[in-house]
Amino acid sequence: MPQTDIDRLLEGPLEEVLKQFDGKRIHALENRAMLRIFLCTLGGIFIVIPALLSFDFPACLLVTAVLVLVVWLCTSRIPKDLLYGFKTEVVPVILQTLADSTSYDPLMHISEEEFNESQLFARPDIYSGMDYIEGVAGKAHFRCSYIHALEEREERVTETDINGNIRTRTETRTYTIFAGLFFSADCNKYFDGRTMVIPASFFNKPLFGSRSLVRMENPEFNREFVVKSSDQVEARYLITPAMMERLMELKKRFGDYRLSFTDGRVRIALPGWRNYLAPDIKRAIDRTQAEMIYKRLAAFIGIIDDLDLNTRIWTKGIPPEREAVNR
Picture 1: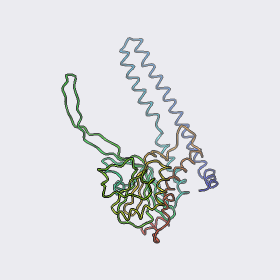
Picture 2: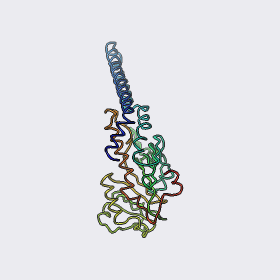
Picture 3: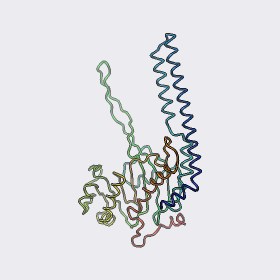
Picture 4: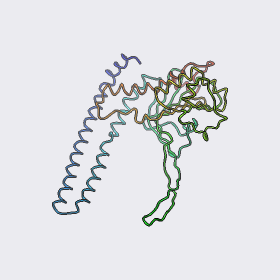
């Protein structure tokens, strides 16, 4: 979207909305400041009075410190109503300038079934997410959201008590499989197999058997990525020399990521990006923050152009089930 169109948007339908949200932000910060002042005053009273009356001063000090810490941390969070309101009123307007037939729900996420279909990670035990976006950019249908996937592992823990006795118990611990933006788009080529592109730093032989590994022709690409596929020929059909260059450029922009060609779609897992559509409450909610949100949205929707997914191969068009979405 040209800069002049962004200016027109921010000086038009969004200008008054941003002013209203900034007013709410200022009000929220003022309330937080008053609450903290009251809390510190109350904490001081709890410390001074016990000292004057010879109460258990260390215990009172500990209780006061814990109370102050808990309330301070709670008041440091962005007010949920301000965050939700910004996302539902501002983000959809910006999103419509970048893609067609868009829909956005801050409380929804990519399905766990699709996450598993990508075969990029182990199946999670705990799965959640937010900021679900769906739309059509050119001829490519896409959807994405923030995902937090975790697995639970039972581990044996050995402890030694004060008498030197050793005891072993089983403890369930939770580990993050993936936390970041999960992006899924129609592929511009037909394929039947499964092909994964993983950063070379994440290569794990037990997970990726040697018979499924595909050695590509670009030495620089091979230093950056490992390719695993169910079909060697199909992998080279999908990951052409031009595609290798695009994938390396994508890494320069986003850092390490994982990508798969599965079930007719390209799926990309980009670590990070938590609350990437939320405003910074410490700063004025103005056109600068709106432009920041726009650039973030443009960056990952731009992946479709980065990977040239709108260049249809063998006249592959929009799937029939997506034609209605594109109207």
